[in-house]
Length: 69
Image (cartoon, rainbow, N blue to C red; front, side):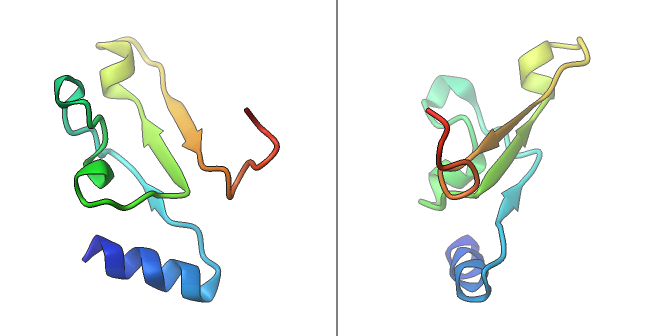
């Protein structure tokens, strides 16, 4: 299902944004998309980062931010 969504986004030039997808840091696959072999263009993360403190992050793929290291 996620692979079909990734393909469709690629076909029409849309960005795939994955949100609230923390899966478990101990498994070395912190985001649910990792389990399905899908790479979103953007991933949002919040609760696991702050442990109750209001903090969040937006992770960007090279497609979205190609000049960033």
